Amino acid sequence: MSLVGPKDRTKPWKGPYAPYDLVKELCIAVGVIALLAVLLTVLLSSPDDPPSTIAQWSHELPADFATTAAKELNGTSDTAEYGPPYNHSSGSVQHFIFLHPQRWLGVSHPIDTAEDYVVKPLETVPNDPVLQSALAEYKAAPETQKKEWSEAYAKPLEEYSEAVEEKKAPPATVSVDTTTGAVTVHTSGAGPVPTMMASLQSLAQSGGLEGGLVSSSAFFQTDYTKPLLFMADGGLLAERAEGQHLLGEQWGLMNETGSYPGQPWLWLYALWYQVEPMKESPNADIQVLLIMGLLSVAFISIPFIPVINRIPRWIPIYKLIWREHYREISGA
Amino acid sequence: MSAASTTPPSTPRSKSWTVKVREKGVEALPPERLLPDGQPTYVASWIYVFGVASIASLIVIIASGTILALKGPAWWHETSVGHFFNSIHMWSVELFFFVMVVHLWGKYWMASWRGGRGRVWVTGAITFLVAVPAALTGYVSQQNFDAQWISTQAKDAMNSVGVGAFFNLTNFGQMYSYHILLLPIAVVALVSVHVLLVRRNGVVPPFELEQRVALTSAGAPPEPNGSPQAPTGGGVPRAATGEQS
Image (cartoon, rainbow over all chains, first blue to last red; front, side):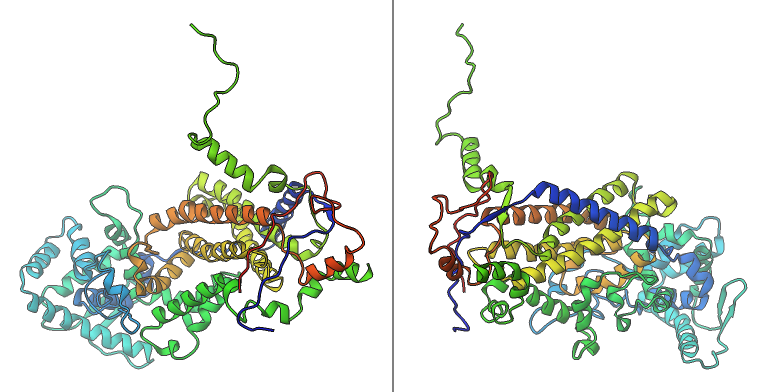
């Protein structure tokens, strides 16, 4: 028996036919599936955990919000350092050997984190001469000065976040009022930045920042890229996700909130992220997608792949499927 | 003034595109093959149910999705009726993938691409692959925490291969369009082609059928149409002579 080039000798059926009502079968199937879906709905419903908001984030995790906002202004957040399609950085740019599709497609959704997440929203705050003065000072300063101010403000906050994460005593340079959600950074050399960031925190806590991030020159808006990326730079979404077994190491890619099945059909996709070298690779996504792309082509091409297309003949599960047919044939 | 003709004009066959399409269509799939009232006797296993169950699930998905679309994307968060239909939508998707996977495994173990049926497998496999992003876009269009988390995590994979430039998971409007229009059209089109190919080629016969039939029919020559007991509708599959390795 050839492994690589078996002749397909399947001939058209010349044997008997049995009556068959295709339309009736389909109608019954629709009824049964609809009934099953209703039954599962009545018994199990479906998950609908409300979304997190920036207001909620800035209230519940004020230091995390302040740190994230400082990094956006400083240009050191995940989004600021991401690269295409958001900017020209390279922090999250992936490649595989000579394949650089992320770079090839360019910056299609430009985000300037300092401008979009801090400066522009603050420009919408009315009747605040102190803030307007601080903003004017910041905007008039040269880039090196802006960088110096924002770094002077961000550094104590980053040290505070690290200490909290490692469960150490937080530095005295940052004080957080858990009642009001106010964050104060005791630092010199930050120029107008502390005033700006205090206003941003107030704006966020009032619920005004969400609108500031989705609004554009158009009245209608359906693109939530900016607020979602801003929130993803912080810790609230990840904190909630961990509690709902949604993190990558928890196979979260195929899960959803609660004990619902999620997307189990993504199990193979999720599997590759759990094994080396993808598990620790900075290029894990493109590696996994290339693997899945190859496997998808192979899946489509199964009829034409030697050996794979012969396995069904070697492992005779078909004898179980067509057992009645073979019984009739042998009986005859 | 001449009297109007009571019969349709006789268009020369070579000139009319309409006639050509009709004749090609009927030739490829005559009505009795498109909607047969008989199946070969070997089509007698529960595994065959999963193909029609996949189509049935797709119908329930589209029906429940249509109701959700009629009321808008926020409706299901605000009313218990909306949540009810969203749940039906979600569970019919879960059922769709379950029965489709069983259907695919069943067809693999039957090597159902035999006899020139390679395109049937190919369209079925592509349907599964297109259904995956159809479901993903549904998850990121939910406007809840799942949508927030899934979109912000899955964006990295899309961006890594450049797809994020035109398939932005964090853009609700774009994802909703993909979910309720573009990808469903692709899935329905693929399923339609898949079903038409199945009807055209017939259900794949069991392994080694030719030798066994030759033995059993030695004393009883087949009818002229090759189907001794075919019901009225025929249901005779197209002669499948394609070969592949």
